[in-house]
Image (cartoon, rainbow, N blue to C red; front, side, top):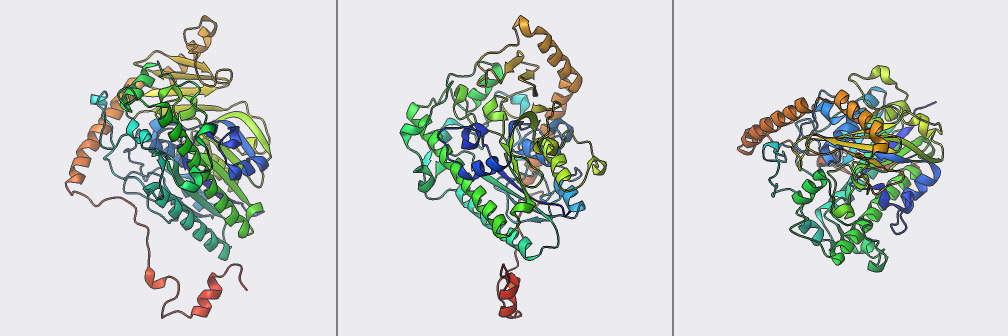
Length: 500
C-alpha cells in the first residue's frame, strides 16, 4: 500500500481551550470541528517549551530543548540535527514548508525540499535574553500590555498579509503535487494567527458580539514567583487592563481563531479537490497556547494549562474517530510522522525523546504518556521545568517553590498541592526525577554561556560581519506562466487540473 500524504497545519499561540472542537461555547471553528468529528482528538497534548522557536525546534527534531540547545527565540537550530523533514525525504516524500517555523541560523530549510514563503520573524541572534540581568525588561521587541490595549479591527496587518500568502503558496504547491503524482508528499502549512497583536478583519470580528465574549475565569494575578516575574515582564502591574480592553482582546483573538480555522478549511478543501482526502493524514496543532488573561497573564512563557497545552487533532487513513486522554507532546510528532510514512526508529540519526502516537490515533490505549517541558528564556534567571504525568503536573525552578497541580480536577490550577501532606510522596518522587533528568546548575551555566556568545556575534553581525539569514524564496519570472520560449497551449494543458 502506498504511503499516505501528510498535511500538517500549525497555528501560533492557539490554546485548545479556545476552540469549539475542544468545547468552547463561543468560538467558531467549523473546519477544525469537522476534522475532530472524523478523527482523533488528543486532550492532553503539550508543547515542550512555551515559546515559539524552542517549541518548534523540539517539534521538528523530536528532541527536548536542553538536548539541542534551543533555549529561546534567538537560539540557533543547528543544521546537524535531523528533522522529520529529513526522514520523510529519505522515505521518498516530497516535502514543503509554507509559513512560519522561526528557524534561527544560516540553515533555513532543515530538511524541507521546498520552502515557498519567507519567515515572519528575524533569523538572527537579536532576540537573545540576558540572564545576567534577568530582571531588566527587554523593550525593543518584547510583549507588553500596550499590545493588548491596541486590540480590535483592521483591514490589513502584517500578520494577515503573511497568513494569506502562506495559504496561497501552500494551495499552489498542493496543486503542483496533484499534477505530478509520482511521490507521496508532506506539506507543513504554519500560520502566525491567532498570535498577538489581537487585530482581526471585520468579517471575522463580526462573527462575535461583545456580549457573547466570556471573560477569564480566574483573572487575579498569579501568585507564584515565576508567574509574578512574567507579569512584571509584560508590564501587567504598571499597565493594568480595563474589563473592556480584556473583552476586546479576547474577541479579536476569537476572531483570529476563526480566521485560522478558515485557512484549515481552505487547505482541506484543496486536498479534497486533488482527490487525495482519503489518502492524506491531516494533523492540526500549535506551537503553544495563550493565557488570554487567566491569572492576569497574557501570551505564553509559563507552564500553566492555557500556555503549555496545544491542540492536536489527527484525521485520515489509519486514524480512528474518538478522543484520548493520553498525555503527549510535540516531540512525539517526529516519530509519529515517520511511522505514518512507513519508517521506524532504526533510521534515527540522533536520540529521539518522543514516541509515535499512531497506536493511540488508531484507537489503542497508552499508559506510557508523559510530557516534559523546559523553559530557558526571558522572565527567569534559572531553567524552569514541567513534568505532566497522569492527572498531575509538577513545575520546578531552582529559585522558586515547587508547584503541583491536579489538572484534571483543578484545570485552572488554583490549588498548589506541593505542600499538601497527602501528596508528599508524589512531590518527593517528582523532585527526585528532576534531579535525575537535569543538572540544573550546569544547564544554567550553559544557557548563560550561549547568551554571551550570541551577544558578541549579534554585535558583529549588526556591524556588517555577515550576510543576513532571512529566507528569500527563489523566484524565476522568466519561467513562470507563459513566456516567449513556451507554447502556451502546452503550458495550459500541463498546468490544468484535472487535465482534459
